[in-house]
Image 1 (cartoon, one colour):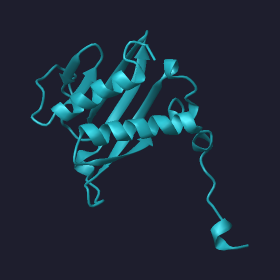
Image 2: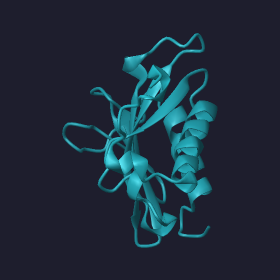
Image 3: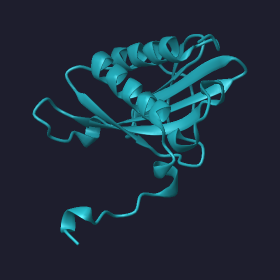
Length: 149
């Protein structure tokens, strides 16, 4: 048997992904690429039990993602990596996005709220926070911020 025919088995949740789920990952990556230039983003599901592999309907959207960041030359920039959570509360889509370090995080429901990631207290937007606000607004618009698709 040629070595090219040998493949490692995929995790069950990854094997269950269909084109709609892949489209969601592509949509998130494209939105991040547009809003957080010049970086390029790869989307990794960090909640397989409720993430992309199980997603059947955008009305039930509830997933945690990590966005791995690279510069235009393809070099990894882990200090720019993002954590992103998409979830519904009633008919509204809520987005939580923040860097993977100790910088403030953004909750975006009907409006943006910046919070200290350690204490949960409200804080002012960091100097490099505008691209994250743009990303949250774009995802809410693309995925139906008020349940409208």
